[in-house]
Length: 236
Image 1 (spheres, rainbow, N blue to C red):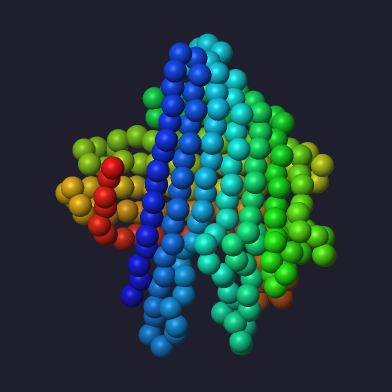
Image 2 (tube, one colour):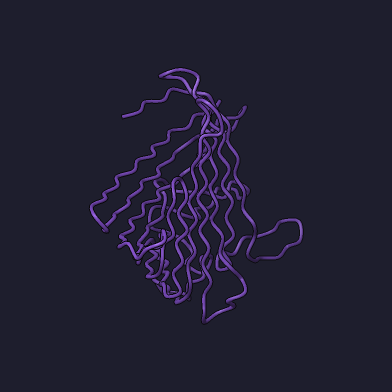
């Protein structure tokens, strides 16, 4: 048995050459299998705000700020008792950048050669070293470049596809190891209140260290989540 709640909200402003785009992506899901307790299957807070001024030819001078974290504690269930590995603002991510944004209908490509990434681990009971922080530290700062690509299109009647790709390269520490955050979602409308959704979410963060039980090693890993469901949808 499983369930998933999603909220996708956009608040955009446009006047003359000035534009302001805001997005809120919230998800929380759970799964219950056989004799195990209910566990969360999805947990995301992703908020971004982008301010732009038209430069011509589809390009805009732009600044972007974004925040990511999660609602509830996360656990490693392979440990007995279960081990706490994350919670709200542990980690939390704040990104800010200045650059150029190319916009057409349904497509936005934001390029920021100067951007900062800040990683927060505010909880004392979460190991900050698992997220690239030095022991005893609560914040890690990185200077680098950001690329954000957003795309949305109607595949056919009542079927839409959305994709959000975020890339970050740290100039000062292994710039060739690019952080990747890629969300893709296919929305299929059945009627005004019923829809089917296919979601994939892929993450690679060079600073997040994950244990591999098979090899006994710890390091950065590719993380992937896929979810398909049918449920109630309300548009406003």
